[in-house]
Image 1: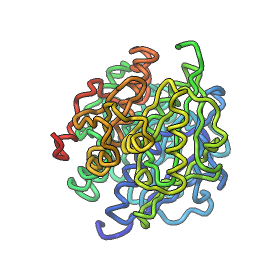
Image 2 (image 1 turned 180 degrees about the horizontal axis):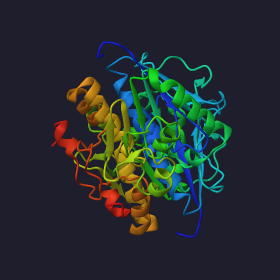
Image 3 (image 1 turned 135 degrees about the vertical axis):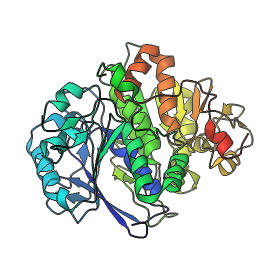
Length: 216
Length: 216
């Protein structure tokens, strides 16, 4: 594994949460200076894709450039699925994300979700019968999308087979570093967290936000 | 202060560090659901601006859309200056950033730097005689750019008057939340960190990376 380029994809959609994407991505940016990676930023079209969402018309936003449409996606080893306000939608763009997750999942080595991105994986059906977590503030709405998932309330992240799901927003950094430890070793995970000057959570069961939001 | 829209700008340049920008920005994205903000993403041109840098030709990268050129920048209350490999350059784009910082600084309420962004502020001359910190892994090179700065090795962030400088990469989240506490109060800073499920560092003097990189 360690000598081969890892082919990473990120599933983007209107109203994605910026840090859900760029927390993991900057870990991967740093990793790519040490280890060969390819990155595909997926969206319905090649137009800039924005964090803006109609639910918050006055909020500020940012737009990033996708590098591939879902229809033209190259083979991937790892798919990251972020959350955000848009992850709750059932727009054509989100239905395309759900379809992509369901279609590509069998060929992935790893599926990693951040925040309410696990709601998208759940709706795509790939979490049925599996343990998973999600954003703690959006717990009720997100877990309601799929009863067949074994939702774990107190967890910074949860691993079940090839699927890694994480808690809200900044937890995406911790799950990415934990996944790097699993795939590339402790030394690499430490090196990346040190380069980001990030004190990572290494215990997946430590989750102050499950209590804060009254889930345990 | 709390009732007025805060006019935020972010200084972008080729080879910026993604999390230096999107850590603070996602705090601001969340804040903008509670408090009126405007955001200007500044660059030399309106073309997409990339994290890519010639020093790492095989590294992965992302591109985001600026919303204004430096020449057409609107009035700003707060300017964020990220770091990254590009911050070490003396290209025309970086010289324009330095000129912009020096020109706009007198009219800013706050200047906030992340990582080696303090090297840009230092080169622009606005840190002369002031206490400041920077990325700990890039300490030697970054502090060497300007002797007239009082560089503080052990600090997650440093406040000197209107200027807030922070340590490497993820420290941008902590300095942004600390600045929110100062400007909008503890309750708002807590609310934003809870929405991001981020356990923030509230003590600016706690800095494990100063020791890790042998600076203290």
